[in-house]
Image 1 (cartoon, helix red, strand yellow):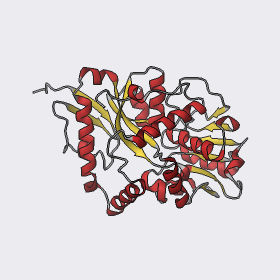
Image 2: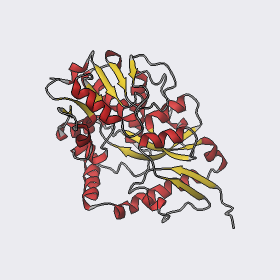
Image 3: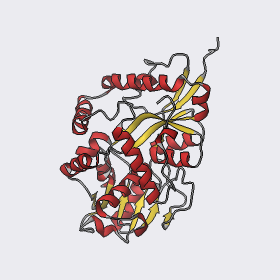
Image 4: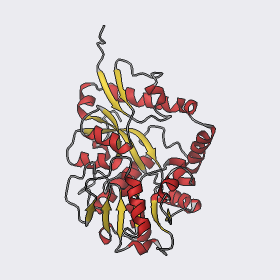
Length: 327
């Protein structure tokens, strides 16, 4: 017998903080969840959500703000799924740069000009070293998700774009060969972004001489404490029509993610659990608690500001217009 409950489609990652939902241990009362979690990369997942394939989806935070500015009917939930500093995701070739300011006037690669990680990395270079986005040329190896307007910078694009999930090696090769002076990529987040480790350095170092431009853990922690920012990379978004048609659904879904987060240690190794505890200790709070707190508000406003500087947005959006009304 067919269910009479509304059917809601979700495109989310297979992750310790989603596993209890994917495995069916946590449900949303009154609704049937149809979950897709098998994706080649986060970029593919975000692209498919942006194309309307899912009612709910993990989404690039920067792309979300751009779609909201342009009137696309998505709303955010206070589920900030992937976070962390991006300094370790800026790569160069050993011996080619003596200081980050040497990037001025150079050609820089990225997997997407509008990717959230890249927006944060350029924002860091602006605030800490005075490097304006317009003072560099840009090379893009992958698919853009949503730009929405003309850019104020020179952007060369690889045609056809590299398939989702394969963009990093293209950039590493070009940096190693000297065709690019640096590459801004996505990769290890959370406690790995703070303390190092993870898989990204190994992936990028498949070509000779490639190394992170920033590797000092103490400096990264000082930046976090000074700015009181904790970069939001991915968030959970939903179609506005779902929130309007089913007003009880968004708060129920947020609570489901909170409960899944509480159960997430069951799906983690001891090293992962310890890593998340170290991350929380540095910040003084849990960055995955599914709340729109002061750090989250400050962080989203900074992301908006950086996109204006980088030519991706025109104006600052009031946060209350971006998130579901029950907040």
